[in-house]
Length: 397
Image (cartoon, rainbow, N blue to C red):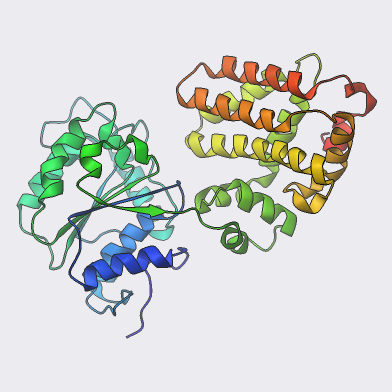
C-alpha cells in the first residue's frame, strides 16, 4: 500500500517526526505533548499528521497510508477520535457544561466549518474566530464529559489544544481544570498542546507534558517554496522577513508590493525633517492593528524595517551589496552611508525592538510610534536631507 502524509504541502521536520513516531512504535507515548516554536511553522499540522499516523490502519513505521477510512476522515478533520480545542468567543447564553458551539449563530457555525475546511486543506491556516481571546472553561468541561464516554471509533483519542497559552488567559481557570485529566487521561488518549508563546504556559501544565521545540524553518527551505513568478531578490526578502514561518512567507508573497510600500513610507518618515510623515506611519500601524491578522502583519512591518537598518549597518562596513537583503536599494544604501558616516545603525534596531516590546505590553501605540520616529530621526540625522530627493531614490511616486 502506498504511504503518504495528510498534508502534501507541509514541510515536515524530520527529527521531530522521527521522535514522534518512535514514541508510538516503542510504546513510549507520553500522556501529553507540548509542541512550541514560532508561529506558522506547522506545529498544528504535525500534530494532525501524527493523529492520522496513530489511527491509520495501513501505516508503516514512519507514515500513514493516506488512503484508509481513518486517514480520509482525518484529512478533512472529521475523525471521531480527533478533538480540536482552540480559543472561542465568550457568550453569556452558554450553560456550564455545554460546548461553546451550542451558542453559535447559524452564520458563526458556517464560518467555523468553513475555517475547518481551510485548515484541512492548508497546514499553515490558522483558525481565527471573531472575539476569541481565550480557551473557555466550557471547552474543557465539554471535553471531559466527552472523554468519560467510550471512544466513538477504534484507535486513539487525540486532543489537539491549539494556542494553548490561552488556557491561561485571562486567568488560569481552564488550565487548572485540565490538569488532572492531562496527567491521567483515559486509556489510549493523547493530549497535544501547541503554542507560539511558551513562556505564557503555566508551569503546572508544562510539567505534565513532554515538550518538543520546533526550530524555525531555514531561509533556504522557505526560499525554495516561494512561487517562481517572484524574482530571486524578492524571494530572498520574503524568506528573510518570514523568520522561519511559512505562514508569514505566504502572506508577504501575496502582497509584496504592500510590504515595500510600507517600508518606503517608514524610511521616508525617518529622514523627514518636519515630521509630516509621522502621522501617516501612525495611521498605517493603527490600521494594521485593527486587522483580523494583526499579529503577523505587525511582525512583517517591523521585521522589514529592522532588516533595512541591519542592511545599513552591514553595508556601511563592507560596501558590498551582496551582503545585504534589500539588494534593490543599493543606490539608496550608497548615498545614505556616504552622508551618514557616523550613524549608529545598531541603535536604530534597538529602538525599534523596544517599541515592539512596548506595543506588545499594550502601551499606547500612537505615542510609542511617534516617540520611536523622533528617536530614529535624532540617530540618523537630517542635515543632508536636501542634498538628494528621497522620492526619486526610494521609487515613491
